Each structure stands twice: as structure tokens, then as C-alpha cells.
Length: 109
Image 1 (cartoon, helix red, strand yellow):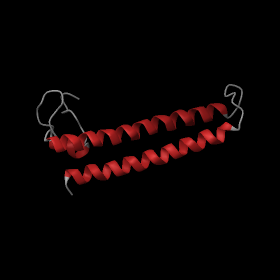
Image 2 (cartoon, one colour):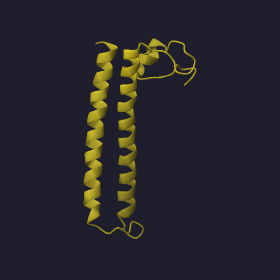
Image 3 (spheres, helix red, strand yellow):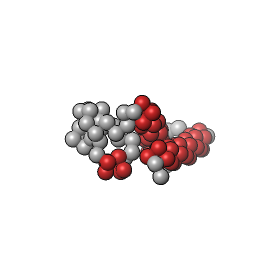
């Protein structure tokens, strides 16, 4: 498997995750739309609020990962993949294996 293949695989994974999280968040909003909007006095309010915040954060992370992979693919097309944004040196192969969309070497991270 090439690096590009791995990036595309991860992009598909992150995209699917983002779609599932967006669906869950929409369902949560729809379910809570017809209930008491007073979270402070509703015994379930804190739970719903926490779940909403958690899903929102997870969705933002999944969407950021898709953007990170897209940027890595663009760097690959531009011939700058594997070059640290901070110092201009090569990013270690082990780092790229673990995080193929890394933009910086370990020193600059």
C-alpha cells in the first residue's frame, strides 16, 4: 500500500466517521427539540447538554482530520509531502507512518 493509498483510506474513514457523528448530532437536536428547553431544571438536561457538546467536539475533530488528509494529499501533489512546515527538514519516516498527515517533525511539533 502506498502512502497515497493510506491517506485515501484514512480520508474515507474520517469522512464516514464525520457523517455518522453529524447524523447522531442531528438526531439529538431533533429529539431534544420537543422536550423541555430548560436544561438547568431538567434532570436529563445536563446529560443532553454533555452529549451535545461531546458530539460537537468529536464531529469537529473528524472534520479537521479530513482537512488534514486533504492538505497532505495537496502537499504530495506539490512535492512537499514529508517536509516540516517549521524547519524545512524531512519528517521522520516513523512519524509519517504513525501520522501520515503530519505537517511538522517531532522537534517542531
